[in-house]
Image 1 (cartoon, one colour):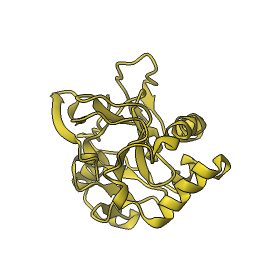
Image 2 (spheres, one colour; image 1 turned 90 degrees about the vertical axis):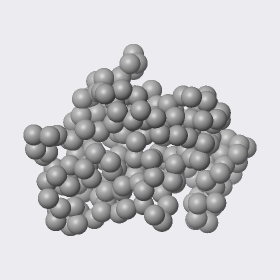
Image 3 (cartoon, helix red, strand yellow; image 1 turned 60 degrees about the vertical axis):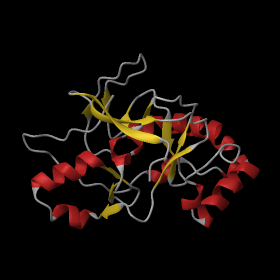
Length: 211
């Protein structure tokens, strides 16, 4: 589930839609939680879909540590990638704002954490743009991503959290363990899938939301 103080907004013909904050979301705000309504598509189920459905699934899903493709039931699936993102997935199963997000600002994410199966070209408007997302980004950048999350997580219980009720007890215990002992931090490396099957799209291609 996406944070309630957000809205879906059309950007342009190239980018399509994006998700934008409707209120100030301070650093440490939980912006997305995988809830019980999300669609979980196993590798076997994915293989049984025709190529057109596979392309649609690829466009709107991310791959979790089990190799399952997760499709959000709400407009969380429209959150765009940015190499200078303001939110990021954590090793605790939710996404968090890694810096303050202003009203009207687009909420962006780091797709490198989503277990990519093939390279994807980027057109970021930032000097830090990597120009291409690659499956090996996880190994190359996860320590940098952990540093940003370690910096944001201590704010988690200091700000308003409308999505906190969706966190299970185990997740809360894990977060509190880190807050009490930084050595107990749960790295984003736990999100890395151990086995992935590749998919080569047809002429229509896979059009992920990239900024």
